[in-house]
Image (cartoon, rainbow, N blue to C red; front, side):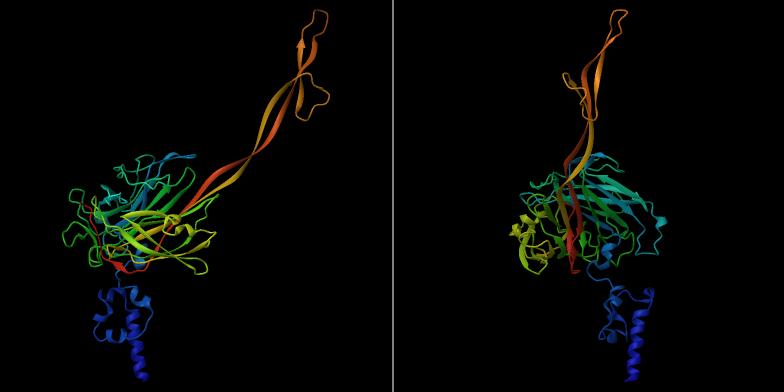
Length: 443
C-alpha cells in the first residue's frame, strides 16, 4: 500500500512539475502510462487548466488578441467646457509582440495591417448595416481615431453607417466595432497575430465620459503567428477554436438598480452577438434574464436584439420594477444562453451606469452702485462714500465743494446649482462555455 501511494505521488509530481516545453499540446489522456492514473485522481483544476486551453476564453480574455471587439459605438459630437468639440466615441489600438509566442521574432514584422468593421444594431427589417476600412501601424505602435474625424487622431476613417438611434438617448446611432489582423490591404486575408490591445472612450455629456476595454479574441491554438486563419477558405471569421477561439453566449454581472425621479440613476445593458451577416437581414438574438436583489429575490425578464442592443433596465419586460424603491439598490443579473431561432449563439455585454445630480457652486461678487441725493451723508453704511462736485467761483472766492451723490461698493455672496452627470461602465462576465460562431463580413 505504501509503495502504491508513493507511486501515485511520483506520478502527480510528474504531471505538476514537468516544464511547459516538455508537455504535449494534447490533453492529458494521450500520455502513455500516466494518463490512466491522472484521470482518476483529483488534483487542483489549475494544474491542467494552465496549460491545456479549453473551448472558451478563460484567462486569455485578458491577453492581447488577433481580434478586438469594441462593445459600444455612438456617433455625434459633444461640446465640452475644457477641450472644445469632441467626438462622441474615440478609439485607440496598440500592437505588442504576441506574448503567447515568445519564440516569434517580432523584428521581422514591419507593418501590421488591420481590417475594421462598424456594425450597426438591426433596423426595423433586421438588416445590420456595416462599413469596413483598413488601418495600419507597427509593433509597439498605437492608432487613434474616432467616428467624426475631429480632434487629436492618427487616422481618418469612413463614418459609421446611419445606425438606428435609441430615442431615449441623446447619443446618436448604436452598434459595435470589430477589428482583426490581415496580411495586407490588397488581399485582406485574416492572419494570426495575438498582439492587439484597445480601448474606447464615449463622451456621455459635456462633463462626463465612460470607457470600455476592447474585448480580445485570440486565434486558434494550432496556428502559428502570421498563419492564415481562414482554414476553410470561406473568407469568414470562424470562432470555432480552429480559426479563432470560441466565444461564450451567457453573461453574468453585478449591477446597481435604477432610481427614477430626481436625481435620476440609469443602468443599461449593452449586448451584442458575433453571429452576424453583414448588410443583410439577421435573425433576432434572444435570452432570458434573471435579476436578483440583495436578499436573493428573483425578477425574471428577457432581452431581444438584432446584432447589437442597448437596454435601460426599465425598458425590459417587467423592468419598471427594477428600481431602488421596489426591488433593491444592487444585485445580480444572470442570462440564459443566447439563441437565434433556437440555435445557441454568442452574446457579449457590458454594464453602463449614468447618474445625474446637482451641486452648489458658491461665489463672491462685487459691484458699485451710485445713489443720487438727497441722502444723509453722515449716516452711510459700510462700503459707501460721498461723491463731491467742485464748482469754481469768481475770484477771490474759493471753489464751492458740494455733495452730489453717494457711491457704494457692494459684495454679494452667490450660490448656483449646477447640473452634472457621472458615468462608469464595466464588462459582464461569462460562463467559459464556448459557442461556435461565424462572423460574415460580406453580404
